[in-house]
Image (cartoon, rainbow, N blue to C red):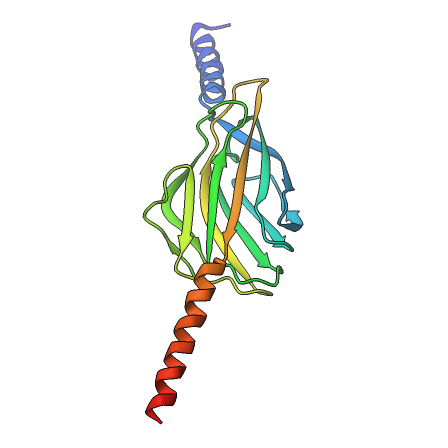
Length: 198
């Protein structure tokens, strides 16, 4: 083999190996399980690619926990994930706030919310939100209705042959009985003043 051909062959092999070695290692979601006292139903979409879409229904007032299993993967696809979730409220109670929190039961693997574009239709992202919690306030998710949440999750690569799990806990808030009592008392007071003026 001529020297020039050998150089070309070695260069081609180095280019291929360099390209393979430069491929991005990513955390890849392989499973999502739902549980919790609030859960009515859960439907996860396609887990391939970098976008996840799912739908969840609250049939009872209480938290719902999504348990993610993350494995080693090679891009494209995988983390960071852009997520669109439809949340349905079939509890009979209006939700006044909504909270997401990341919990890593086995170890701190660095799973975080990223970007400033997190949103829940009809709510405001509260300034108390951070990389491991999203607090949505100033709105209402009415009984019998649904709203779309959009956010981005970064799930680091666990390394070849390894996996880890983390939880995404979702907790709705409702008006407390004391708040209802104050509101009713206020309305009765206003009605009493109006009656006196008549």
